[in-house]
Image (tube, rainbow, N blue to C red; front, side, top):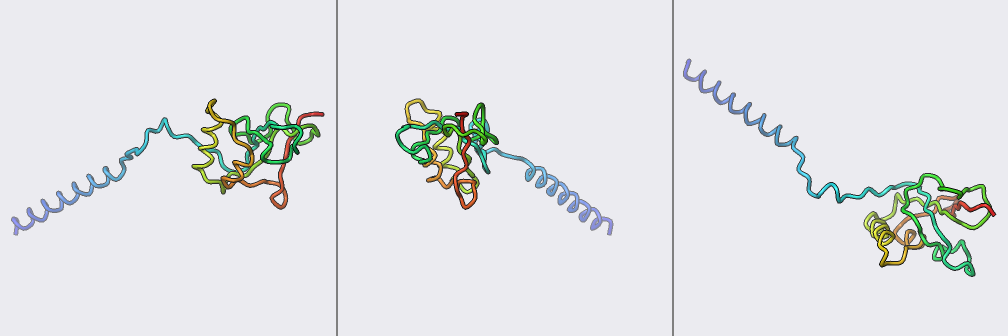
Length: 144
């Protein structure tokens, strides 16, 4: 009887040790990428600073709005304001439904001096949407 008790006790000890090892392995995080290479793309509604490519074309044409800064502003920057009536200087887009890889490619293009800056149309093509009523554009402008 004592021998059976020792065997059961030994088996239980091994089982507890095995479970402890499994739990410690399960809690270990093994990164699959170099964390310094990961860039965080803001999603949701973002103001994107733009310049007008050709003043002879309509400034409200998304293909005429060259992106000048990464879309990370939650409000228009600098002298750009929704209360002003001058030239468009920022466009508000919702990036939630946009393809993250395509948006990242556009941001990479924006940061590459060998490539032309993307336009608002490029972001719309990637799945971004306008934020105004009925999916209409929302702009901020410089003072006149």
